[in-house]
Image (cartoon, rainbow, N blue to C red):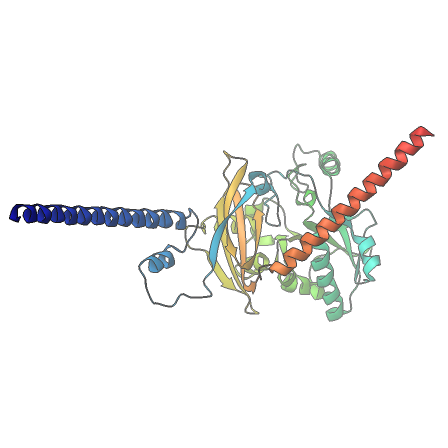
Length: 376
């Protein structure tokens, strides 16, 4: 009897040990699974361009410190590498050629007539400029007229084709007898070919536009509309273009303001921005109205058809190529962007489906009519 009791105790002891071992194994496997999951979470959270690793680390460590709700979060965006040749900050000069194509142009005079504006005119209806430039240009000259009562400004130079630039270049060589010109840019290297530049004149045969007198208002205020005096008198050694009091270039308000207040030409500004990379310190400033801006540079991936560009989430931003080696991202921290609601998305989907159904019905009707015509 005692022998049987001892046997039962031994079996019970072995069973208990087995259960304990199995429990320990399960706990160990569970711990390993949790560790693996955390490791994967950490790796995914640290994207190559996300600059919020401190916040991510605080979350993982269980910190109770409040996170700044105004801190900008960045995410990756994929853009075509060739887009570095497009945008309002492209540098076009003797070193960097403009690769033309796909310009969204409008006739200045036709738009002026359409809008009922009379503050200025262009030389004729063939004078064109990029559509994004027309509105700020018109607003500037409308305000100039309101300030001075002067409405005799004439746009003498606007967008030019590469062929037209060649004609002007050849004509200048013929007139001067020189082998090269320091007054007319080489074809492919003129800002007029990109549509962001224009030349002011005065609708009077006896006067030329020199930016003096009451016209100096434009020099002092053009940055408020996104324009710069492109070829300043004290920058000729950098631009390699003689002083042109009449030549203005659209670059956008943040950049025009910074260049104006820091006495920089476009060549100097583009070079400066290269030092403000996404991974390092960004260029941050506010204009005289208190509007804040944040700007940084991302080098293009010339070995690939696309380039990954980090962009802010939830706020307005713009991407422009510099026509050389990368992209310039301009962030407007004060301009929040609300995510589209689910209802809006559903409405768009329903509208799209309705349009597609209508198109299909129209196609079927057209097919039936075609068959009937063929039978006749």
